[in-house]
Length: 119
Image 1 (tube, rainbow, N blue to C red):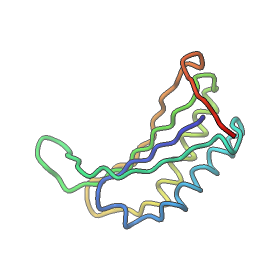
Image 2 (tube, rainbow, N blue to C red):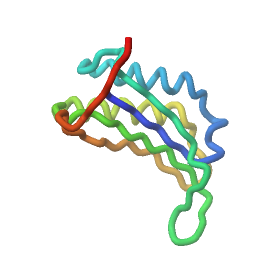
Image 3 (cartoon, one colour):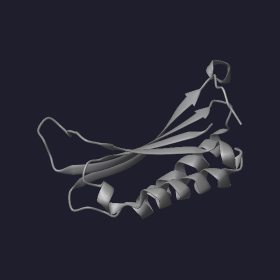
Image 4 (cartoon, helix red, strand yellow):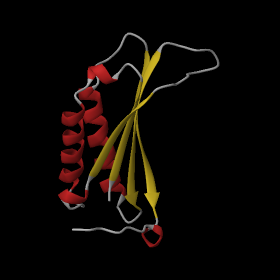
């Protein structure tokens, strides 16, 4: 924990270097100081199909979901969200169409998070 999942519209993949993006997001999360560096997980995926509005529009989006246990302070959450948003804005260049870059949180109850780890 935490997990950061970044999704973007098809066609945007060629604009970003995935490994650098994931490394920068992991470093941004690590700088918040409330996770072990080895516990930070980052995943990226391309949305092959997306639709915006009632009628199809040319668009692109980048949406990050940060999944964390709900024992973090508002200040820690703000720092995480702002740090990840800054990385996404720097890594994805502006496009001449309708676009958005968002970051949202899923807060998880620690007593309902289960995992098995093999070393």
